[in-house]
Length: 212
Image (cartoon, rainbow, N blue to C red; front, side, top):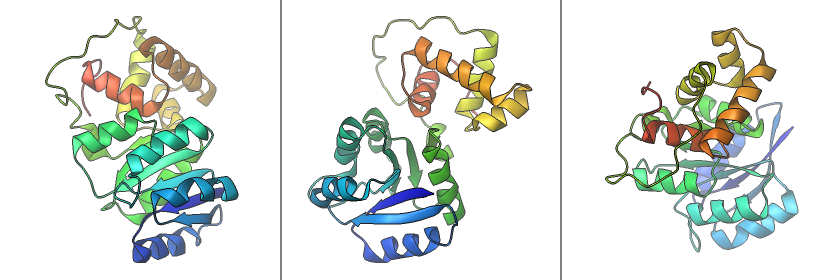
């Protein structure tokens, strides 16, 4: 069972999401918060696996809350669900450790699958945002050159940027899920990142792979 907490100040949206999610056999809504001040106490009480986080909420914004939750409750996955497609919001959320970033115009079935994805420890980014990452920075930040990726690791990285899951990567490259995880772990280490989202951003920003 995936325990989910909803953070949004719009009651209609929260109620709609709750009704949709609780129709799923493997998902349960265990808590809700309508402002930033409620988030920590509800997380502590309900101990959710995934927090579905809006950005525009009273008291503290969702980006600030994401950073706080990832610092103080590292096992909790944070999936941002927002109307904001602006690059600065997206990049700020990922820098704060968000496990996923989706726009509210996505079909609800994709939101449900995204919750399952981040609950498994994977990351997900709205495909319309992934394609806009290149050129986000007007000036390149200085960074140490990553260790050179092997040809297989480059293939896996291309699949990550395309939004494929471990299972889908394994099927495409004819390797096991376990082997995929090993390659992903090595990629993280070489790029000095901690999540799929950060790996995707780094890869696109530094033109390590072609955009999907």
